[in-house]
Image (cartoon, rainbow, N blue to C red; front, side, top):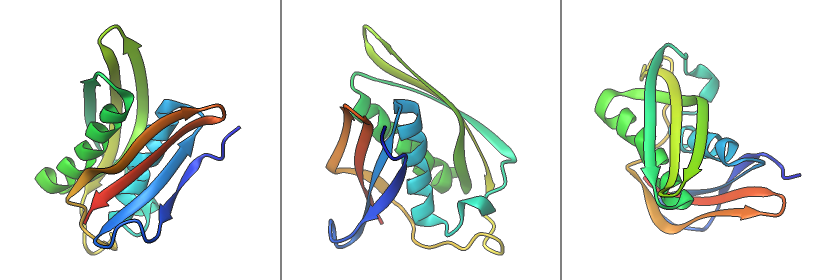
Length: 146
């Protein structure tokens, strides 16, 4: 069994933030990676009230590019709507065309009085980006442009 969670990587990129996420399932991996992305921006994920809902549905040929798109959705909502979101529910299906993720993300508008903001993530990058199914679970490496 794999240790579920994420940890940040030092000395991967000078002007970026990087992390590795691990989980037992692809769904949990996507959730951990989304939390890691948001936690780069917000000091405490527990400070995000789950008041607003956004539905996310994406398709891609490969699971790695699906995660890439998925994480960029969280950056998009932060930039376009000032929303800080966390994954509430998620399902990943595979079909003959590739993969589909359907998720419900919940959160709230950024409130600088309550949310201690750290750095601004501009985008998820393809630099060192990796998603892999291993014998013990799922792993991903992600570098964020800040």
